[in-house]
Length: 263
Ligand SMILES: Nc1ncnc2c1ncn2[C@@H]1O[C@H](COP(=O)(O)OP(=O)(O)O)[C@@H](O)[C@H]1O
Ligand SMILES: [Mg+2]
Image (cartoon, rainbow, N blue to C red; front, side, top):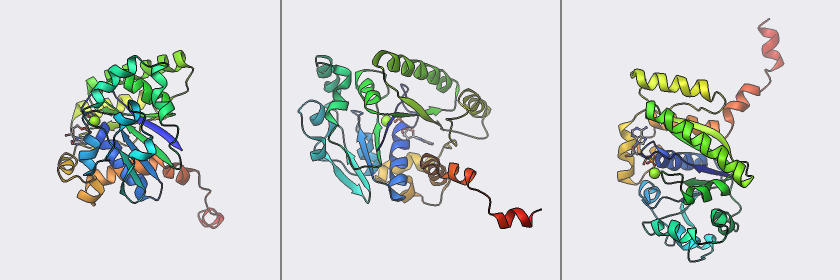
């Protein structure tokens, strides 16, 4: 079970958009996915057009078993929603014993998924520390601009501090450049810088797309809202990278017949 938190302390960089479309795309490929919304804005539910009856606040504060909160959204895709009450959870968590590990403890009954993906609020506060200590991997959507680059440096420092303090081994496995406009010099430079700073982890960029902005209004992931558009292609490519498909293609041995015919 891959446990991935999607975090950036900056808001509006495409975290929720990435969670929703990545999760839907992975589920469509046949893997079983659970999305957990940890942001009190509850945007995941808006984007997917449905919400779970019980939410993550009830797991964190009221001790509800997380398996009782799961709502099936579509084939292979399950959801635990959040709502505005979650803002209170952080204050309540402060008083808990081992307050950074509450989520890890309470999500222990979750099993049987290929992926658990957490959509996180724009902060590095206690809730996100809980998310990072539950997860093994972190994906960071980064806007392709100057402020996005500064934010990335802060994020990587915060993660190494967290790993040191808690003896954790959270790895940044994907950095997803977002809001990319290929005609814009700032975007091009920022993407080049990200690739230079994090050559192993930067994925394909997600282009600026009005369809991605519109889709939440209809409660649909991009694959249902605009199946053949640019944004669907971008997110499908990201899905393939996360599933390791590109890697497989690169390492696949060349058939002997092809080698001989080309020599
Ligand atoms: N690639 C994109 N192109 C255009 N608009 C986008 C793109 N990604 C996200 N958005 C829009 O930008 C806003 C913020 O995105 P969101 O995913 O909610 O960011 P975050 O979760 O980081 O706050 C939303 O209105 C969303 O629809
Ligand atoms: Mg969000």
